[in-house]
Image (cartoon, rainbow, N blue to C red; front, side, top):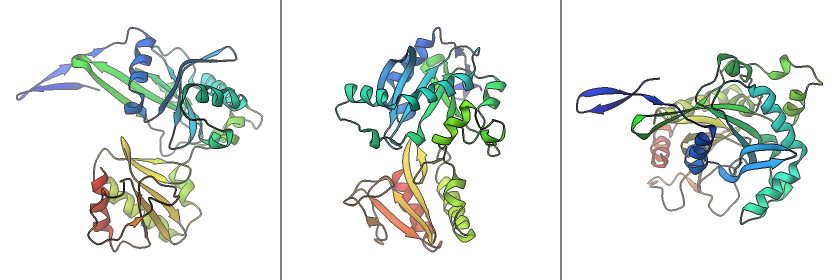
Length: 300
């Protein structure tokens, strides 16, 4: 990847500046954890059963713990360490909750945590092809994030996406393997999970709305959660819940912040709901597609 600095009409290449220490990468992320990952900082250098976890974080949207490990070189196995730490989390759940309660203002109960959405993130300036391939399984809760710094204090963070054709880890692991123990308890949700049990009409309706939302901004990403499919640009813009009769779309705006002349959005600020934001609409066709996109655009 080449990064350029534009001065008047001329482009000059910004040279990459290597991180001197792994701690430099860790400090960069921990000082900016909310901006870079949208996660809540729990503990730096969290030690449990003689294992030292670089960063322990909490995903408030998924209600799950996230382990972050930083690597400056490539001489390690993301699978071995990732599986080991995920197993550690699932075996000693109470210790993670105690750490949360000791460092945060509010208390967390075991039932408040969705352990099925636990994951580990490896952060490094680069990964080998083998590391990328070995973690490229759709149901393996291990993510790789590349981070690079350049001249002029420019930092680029690039989460490596799993391929659309990524296989299941179950296809290559024996039933008694340590990895399969994790797969049975931790679920990596995708669009197929939300669509597979619904009729073709709903799938086509979703694809139409998905394409329209993505066309609003090139930076919008699709991220599947347990209860909904999120469309994000740094923060959630809209969340989609699939139903037998169509879709339910939640708009991530607070009550009073939406300009909706046709009054088609429902105020859900005082009732429980899965998606983010205070506005909801149920759709079974594309009749109001263009107008709904004008509403969603307000949340970008």
